[in-house]
Image (cartoon, rainbow, N blue to C red; front, top):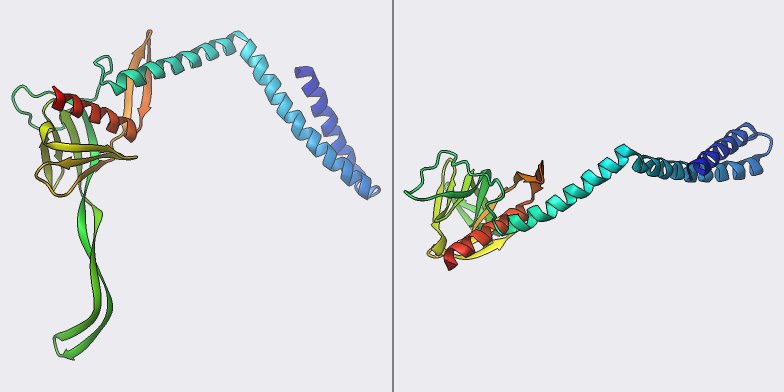
Amino acid sequence: MFAISIIIFLLSAGTIFISFLLRNTLDMWSSAWLVSGIIAFVFGVVFLIIALKKRYDASPAGQERIVAREKKKEAYEVFKRLFNSYSPEISWPTDPYGMILKPGESILIAFPGVDLSEARARRSSSGTGFTIMKGVRLYSGSSKSTDEMTHIDSGPFLVTDKRILFRGLKQTRAFSHKKIVSITPTWSGIMLNISGRKKAQLFTGIKGHIEYEYEGDVYRFKVTPTMFAGVISTIITQSVGS
């Protein structure tokens, strides 16, 4: 296949070159040959790339790379299974980020730079205003209030064996697992409904990488916010059910 690719590549290149030279004498035919040459050239390049790849894959270096790639895929499948069940075989990030825990409380997973958002009422109005006298203005029209998720603060987010903790520059949150009514994973984090609080708490920006050792090799896998949200849900569900 490699030899065929080289032949196609050379013939197509020659066709393009000849068509270019004859462009002024045989306009119609040279144009047709030029288009045909370009198409053949593209196919030749594609076949050449495929042939080179197959030749490389058959070499010792290529075989070693294929084995390493398949091993990494296998490691990732094992990693996902252990990750979703919160297995101790994974090195979970447990930096306290300066938070003080209760006696006997342990950090299960921690994240820096998480954003806290909460539903806040926003009022919009339509209509016109009229000045009646100095300092007095009369408005006519209508107004309505809608709830929108509003960013409140940013800071570290910790899941312990007893609570969920968040510490921002302006706001602090601490929820017992038993106070959590529902857990909703989102594409960027986790939504918590808490007993005694009317408004849901949305924590986003939960992301990062986790190292995992598999059969003597260490891999660094990227973990999506959805995956982290799922394992947090598992931790809290198991804690409340125990």
